[in-house]
Image (cartoon, rainbow, N blue to C red; front, side, top):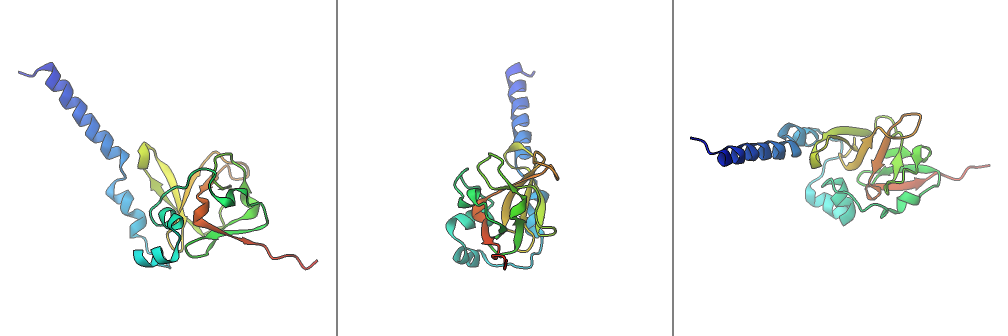
Length: 170
């Protein structure tokens, strides 16, 4: 005969296990980006040698910088924001806006240079964005941005480098 406590404990345990599985990325999702072939592929040791510890944590381990810590947050000159891993141009300065989140935000990437992957970490479904050439993690895209796209690419500034536009000849 089942005791009510045993039944409740069993149900709670099963619920907890299923919730834990939902919080993690499924193997198909976790391997989705890893299974992709990128133009630039390096060993972990090569990435560590090339990148600063902050860049490595963000680009290769999908980390996140502290809000407000990137010097690019306050970069307002004309130019291009490129991948710190491979220097692929990712965002034009004209698409940058102040989102108030503590991370550099853009409403549109340079066409064809940013890839997307479903991210189910931390119990939510988000869209992760990465460099299409080297696979470096950049941040996430949300649908609460300004016109004309309505998108907010919330990007880790330490995963980017800024190239100022050349001074005009006039």
